[in-house]
Amino acid sequence: MRQRSLVPSRAVACAVLALAALAPAPLVAQSSLFGTRGLGIPGRAQSVRALGTGGSFGMFDGGSSENPAALSDITVLTATFTGMQNFRSSSAPSGSVSGRDTRFPQITVAGPVGRRPFSVGASYSTYTDRDFRVATTSEVQLRGVPITSSDTLTSRGGLNDLRLGVAWRGPSAWNVGAAFHLITGSARTELRRGFSDTTYSPVFQTAEISYAGVGVSVGVLHAMGPITFAAMARTDGDANVDRDSTRVSRVGLPASFGAGLRYDAGPRLDLAAQGIYRSWSAADAALIAGGGTGAQNTVDLAVGGEYTTDLRRPYRRPIRFGAHYTRLPFPVLAGERPSEFGVALGSGTRFLEPRSRREVAGLDVALEHVWRREGTGYRESAWLITFGVTIRP
Image (cartoon, rainbow, N blue to C red; front, side):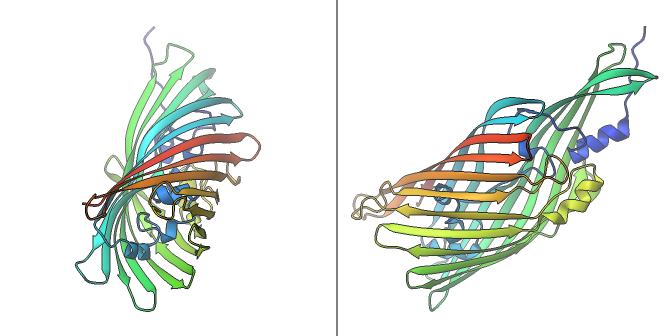
């Protein structure tokens, strides 16, 4: 008998575009179970030092990309490269799976403008991560006969944040900054559908979903004795969504508002706390129209510190610690509220030029254990090992 291919092309295209039309399923490869919906799982644009404090130093750290005013802390040309190894275990009502992946979430280059009270910097960081592979089975009616179909949806890619910022070291311990952000990236998707009845040919469809948007951010730092205050605001507007170079929609990106406090508790101990609100619900309508589960606003809270073990050489092996809690924006099931909680430890060292005692390089490492959950059926536990290499030529 000649094989027939029965392809519901509109449904398949919607599944590839929205990455959410398939029923929830266990993650079988790549990234996080909670990155299979919406635009993926948001990245954390922070240096390894900030991650080691649970993210609490993010808005005070010039190596992070959260607050452009923190660039004022960079007074020597500095380049930093960050890598991350992820080991995780995910569970859903349909099963459990373990996996791991390696990625490079942030690169920064920053330095002063001559002898002027300005610093400029450029950075690349992960905006959202959309690497995943999910598998589902369902029963469909073909020519009046129920047949089991097996679908596998694979996505590789994500959205990136390219930032160009400037900061001014003002009088009276006021530092201000501003930055321009280019949001870009793509997700290469593959959908494979097979049938239990071998008289029907398998379906295979590919697409490349690309995104383009722009944003701006402003920030401030102000020192008041042992306490430093930080604040930032950012808006990313809308992003164009293209499928195979054809414009298909626009999706809203969040506005963000954050504030933090840093306290110099003594010669050995530095403490910090911060919170950031993001209006991810701006993407809700576009995602639901594409067959997804929508988007929700999030709050990210972090607290932590850094303890200096050697006052004579404070750059050698400090102990960093902290914790963070955040709501995730894209639920696996509509109406649910996914969340993430994590604890962190970190340390590092700096290398000095023998004669001038000038810092020329550094190594940092952070170890995080995070737990993600949604409702009663979706759980994920992950170990994140992040390393950073800093060079000051």
